[in-house]
Image (tube, rainbow, N blue to C red):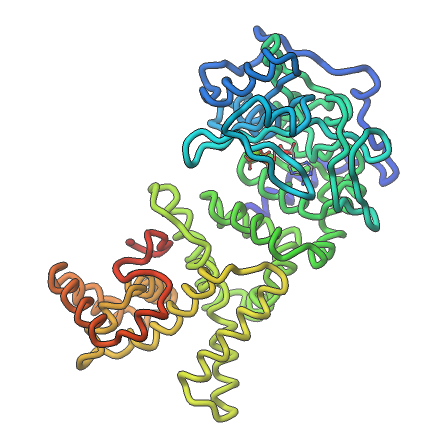
Length: 468
Ligand code: ATP
Ligand code: MG
């Protein structure tokens, strides 16, 4: 449905708003200075700004610096949504920010930032205004049109042009509570448009991850991407191949764990971006568009969204296990045909499939361990007799593996009976007895326990499965 809507929206809008490829890199607003929207004319109220963010803003201001909220939080507040976090922009240098706050750490090489910590999990990010590399002082490194180091400092009217989209480039001034809009961001918010600041081609070449961000914001906010930017995304997706896998991992987490994974997936595929992140998954999807593999991926995405909606914890590990399941099976069969024993074939296939994937999107060890365990347990879940059943039940990843089986059963009827069996078996075994089995199991196998990275009991609170 997303695709149909997108196509319709594009047909309606393309002729009117698409700009030529050599369009002026800065919108008209830049020539006439910023639009200042006074407190009485916008929706941002201090009551909706976190106490810690206000503290940071006021302290910077009191020390004589400029202080603004900027980016996603201004966008979300103006839309009446609850911001995920609060980012601050200032003319104070990172070292000067550090002097003002005892609880402050400077982080980042590519992009130096101050993190002001409040308690364990609450961080206010304070960024110093950036300038074009030729314009300000500090350190900036570009290679082949791409930003490698970005620490040249400047003023707000230089900072603004470097942000990705107009709706992300609004500043809320703690000095007079106004919104400062250099780029027509407020209007784009009202109209529901994701528009790059300046020429989309230049901006996407500078930082190809912005294409993923465009999709993420379009889905999250229910906005449409400006037609020229859309066109460039469809042309430039291949640039993602050159991005560092660790950075793509960060972005993939945001794409798929925000509660709108299914729609995001659809839109990434619509713009031909998905295949650059997950080539093996794309290959499988292309082969059997209407069949079983596609459905498992879809089910896993739906399941993740549902868990987010219910406030349950989610992990990318579960989703990735589902994404790569089909590729794993194919590889496993090949290896078995070559004469490898089943268990060995599975281990080898898992290593290869994960290894191949990490060339695009890195997979931290805790996640790949989880995936391998869930995959291996699928074979053990198929056996329902003897002592092994108890061992399987006592396995620290039992819950996630069972959830995975339930997911598979949703798209493969022949597994339903097995999944039901495990559902009833679990229900029949009291919690106390299960703990006992787990304890015995541990006593049985001291060596395996030492190798395990997580203690037994549950899946570390990060199952993204059916009912964990
Ligand atoms: P979210 O709701 O996901 O936090 P956000 O807009 O706050 O969305 P962040 O990644 O937190 O996104 O970045 C904060 C701000 O920094 C953005 O709003 C944007 O102005 C700027 N920014 C972030 N990443 C880029 C980028 N790759 N290129 C240009 N500007 C960026
Ligand atoms: Mg943010």
